Every structure is written in structure tokens, then in C-alpha cells.
Image 1 (cartoon, rainbow, N blue to C red):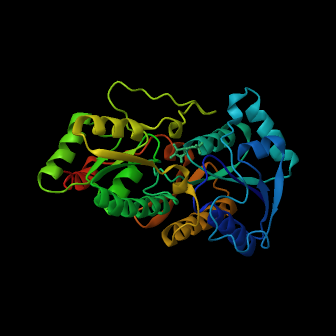
Image 2: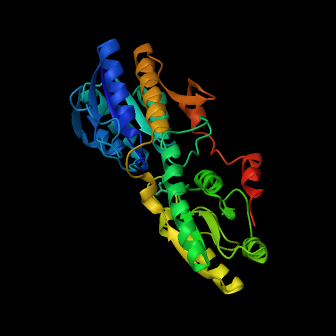
Length: 342
Ligand code: F6P
């Protein structure tokens, strides 16, 4: 079989580990050959390929980003996009396709499998950990570690200057990174989209800390958190999602806290640093397990499926089920963080 592989959406640590696993396992166990498609679905539409073999995947396990490049191209933006993908797929001589991506990339894979005779297997990725079909996605753990390291560093400078530091992290419409990095970094307040809070409540937490003699505070805010009355003003991407990183809620929180509490306040927007660099050991292992199972699904001819983590087991589920719902932070998980506020 000639198996195409592509990575779509925002990059995340562990993508190369998946590519390596699909190629190594597919080659050694099943005799598959592989074709890399460059820059997500754009590579299929443009027939822009790059060779993928044992040599090209050698040494990429610890590398961040993706050797195949990525984009947020949505083939279905154009009414003929599905057909164009199917034609390219046939003319490139492909027999199957492994799509590594988030809800948008995998949503396209599901539609191409069901309606256009392009047999796809999905591998979920995102630092946001927002796919309901899997307990965790690779990339999330590394992003949490990067954010935690930053919070640790901000603690010492906040304490030295008696400051409030507002740390804005990624996560899109859910607060997984904020909650986990906030717990690990000992945040004094965490603001996530799932749990509405007013500026008054944030300031009350800071003031109650200050009243018990603590003269600095760390506030972690997820980029998707909205202060009352603010609907966000980011541009839309090809899948119609607001590009949140362009509208900083951290600045708004910092301004409000400064105004209401009189505290010397600074804001740090961590941004894309959370997606960069080498995956940690957990993500390398999860990505390798996902890639291995994806190669098996291709060999078994089980298309329209995606790999997922349930508990400690790798399972496979319909792609449509895996991307149907956004996975919010459960209230009881956030309650753990909340016990330490103020
Ligand atoms: O989905 C991953 C993610 O990093 C989100 O956390 C963030 O909102 C978005 O991508 C940023 O996208 P871009 O790389 O297009 O700025």
C-alpha cells in the first residue's frame, strides 16, 4: 500500500513522532510505502508531496513542529474541493491516508472517507486537549510544562516587585492548559471560558491574598476567556474559527486589576512558545502509540476511524464521534484549582 500522511492545523510537539511511527511500523510490519503531503490538505489539493521513508524519518522523534509543514486549508471551502481531493488522491497513486490534526483536519478526513472514496485514518493532535473523543492529545503535556516553567519564573519576579502577573495561555475555547499549568504553577486565580468570572471576583481573590500578607499574585487566564460584554475581535480562519491569539484578554484583565486594586500589574502572553520545541517524554510516547495504532488501522482496512486514548489504552473510534464535541474542563477538575485561589 502507498500511504499518504499529512499534518493539518496548528503544529504541536509530537507530530514528527507520529509520522515516524506510522512510517516505521507500516514499513517493517506491513511493507507499506509512504508519501508525505505538504502543508495539510493544501498538499493534497496541489499534489505537493515529499518522500517519506526510513531515512527521512530518522532522527525526527524529538523534533518539534512537523517535517511535512502544516496549514489550516479547508478543501470544503470550495464546492468542488472534495472531488479535487479524490482526484489528487487517485492520481498520486495513494491507497490510504493518515491525517494528523485537530477537529477541523479530522472533520475533513471523515467527509472524504464517507463521501469521496478517500480512505482515511485520523490521529488527534492539539495542545488544547479539546477533543472529546480522547482523554488526552499529544502536545498538551508539553504545552502545560512550558506554561508551568514560565509561571515558576514569573513567581520570583512577581514576589521581588510586589506585582500581580497576569499570564495568558493558549487553549482556544477551553481552559485545559490554563487549569493544568495553573494548578502545577500554584496560580492564585485561573480564568477559563468554562467558568465565567467577573473582574470583581478576580480582584477579590487578589485582595484577600494581599490582606493575609502576600504582596504578589499570579493570575492565569486562558485566551478564550471573555470578560462580560466582550465577544472577541479576532479574524476568522478558513474553518470559521476566531484566531484568538490576536485579541489579548490578558491585557484587559491586567488593566482591570491595575485600575481596581492599584496593584503594579504586568501581563505576559505566552503565545506560540507553548507549541514550540521538543515534545516531552509523555508526548513522545503517546504520539508513538497513536502512530503505531494508525499504521495498524490502515493495514486492517479500518477507515473513517481515529485513534484515541481512553484511560491508559489506545482505542479506535469513528472520526465523526471523536470530533463531534468540544471537551470542556470538568467542574470537579477545576474545583481542585479553585481551592487554592485567593
Ligand atoms: O489550536 C492550537 C492553537 O495553538 C490554539 O491554542 C490557538 O488559539 C491557535 O492554535 C493559534 O493559532 P495560529 O497558530 O494560527 O495563531
